[in-house]
Each structure stands twice: as structure tokens, then as C-alpha cells.
Image (cartoon, each protein chain N blue to C red):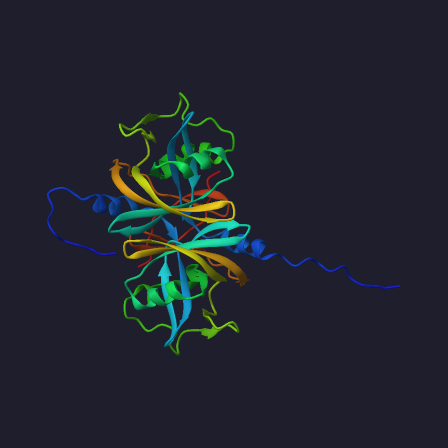
Length: 173
Length: 173
């Protein structure tokens, strides 16, 4: 007869990584592209500036959803940087199966063909330069073609600990 | 990143991009690696989670500094996610020419050879999987090998508008 404690499975590296990263704060963006059956868009917390010469940025997408696949395979995309005024948009694009680019959403096509969200503070049109595929995800490098910036004075939006936050900008002196 | 003061009749795409991105908030990390002449490290606002299977992350580095070149060419690196308790470290690594990994900094070598900062809340050891080079920058994909997480309860640190901020976590309900 053996008397012992059941061995507790120790957390996997993936579990530890997810847990460590949960409170790493990030800005939010919606990335849109034209698909064969209409516009597609995804919410992203991974948009980062890469270079100013050439102007370029990066983002990561899961390739498991149809919206992400459309964005992944598009030649050009629009990256919308979100602020607190875009909270409703962020929630919509965070919800699986939600209606996007519907009649109650302020959007249009650019002359160059990409769908874009009219009320966001900054729209960055990009051409994809290359990909690094890892598992079911793809890291995208994209050159910035043009930038449209509105007059929004709303505070930034931050994603952390699985929740949206309005970021009160009190810098440390 | 260059800061220019040349008079221009209309802003370039790079100027517009830099301006639009200035208030896009980001978490902060220090990425360290062993170099031929000792430890090297850089401050990064571009660390993003890429995948959980395999566990992987990405970051972007300029390849113009010697520290960045050491990180870029290392097989393995340590990504330290920073919180408000790491403000002094963040300032040191943000300052060109500052003394890093000196006697007054709490650091050591891991058994696997990488330098790491003992007092940071989370240390993620990674192996570089691939690069996407854009201009003088390099986007790095790296697989997570192991994660060490301390007991820090400090608030996250956010970089926005060229300043460090302590991020008060009041989620929007």
C-alpha cells in the first residue's frame, strides 16, 4: 500500500508565460482589410513602431479566425490606433461573431479600397512587407504608406489584465 | 529613432507616423544577452505575446547600437517585464552610454549563461526563432524556454508620449 500525495502537475511554460504577460500593458488598435466578401477587421494589442526610415510597424495576428486570415493575406491594411473615445469599437471587435462594419458603424472605403473606421483618432495605411509565422500566429511587418490623424483629445486606451482601461497620463517626474 | 528639427513645408509620412504613434501606450521590458565582452541589455517598448503553442513573443530592436547588435545576434535572450518598482532600471537602460550591469545593479548570470536582472518581476528566457529586418531595425520572433516570476505587487509601467507612467489599474466596467 502506498500513501502519498498525488503529484500536482506543475504549470507548463505556456501557462507561466501567459500569467507573466497578463499584466503587461498594451495600446489597442483595429486592423482592417478588404476581403473577398466585404470588409474584415481585428482588434490587436500588439501594434509596435518598427522603423522611421522606412516608416514601418509590426503586429501579430492569430490565423485561426476568418477575419484574421483576411487581414493576414491582404496586400494593404489600415491600422487604427484607438483611444478612450473608441471603447465601443474596441468592445465590438473584441467580441467573437459580432457584427462589424454594419449600418450603425461609421465606416467607409478609402479611394485605395481598404475599409476604414471614420471616428478613430489615427488611421495608418500600410503595405505588408513580410511575415514570421509561429504556431498559429503570424508576425507582420508593414510599411506605412500614409497617415490620417484627427483632432481627438481623448485619453489613450490600455489593455491589461484582460480588461480595457482609460489611461490617465500622469507622467513620473 | 532620430529627432530632427529641419524645416519642412509639409510633414513627411515618417513625421506623421511618429506623431500618430507618440501617444500609443506600451509596456516596458529590458532584454539582455551575453556578449563577447560582457552582458548587454536594451529597453524595449515593443514586446508582444505571439503564441502560446509554442509559447513565443516578439520585439523590435534598432540595430544601430552595440547593445542592440549583441541582443540581435544572441541565440538566447532574457526578456524582463518591468513594473513601477523597476523605474530606476528603466531610466538607466533608456540613457545612452549609461553604466549597465555594474556593481550597483542587482544582476547575475543564469546557469545557461545569460545575464539577468534579479529584482524584476518576470524574467522570460527565450531562443530567437527568426528575424524580419526593416531599415535599421529588426523584428525578432523568440520561443519562450522558461519563465521566472517573482512576487511583485507593484503597478505596471507604461511608456507614452515620451515619458514613463505608473499605470493605475482602474478597469472600465
